[in-house]
Length: 51
Image (cartoon, rainbow, N blue to C red):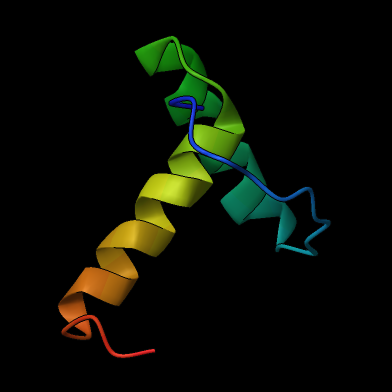
């Protein structure tokens, strides 16, 4: 990850979604956790930053 403070967690995801995440991470040469973090950042930015 980009040097930001991080928290370790466990998630249960549908197997197909996890497989897509892993494949995308490999294609981009990054960790799967970076894909998940990016997706969450995009999700929350679409919500207008509401928490």
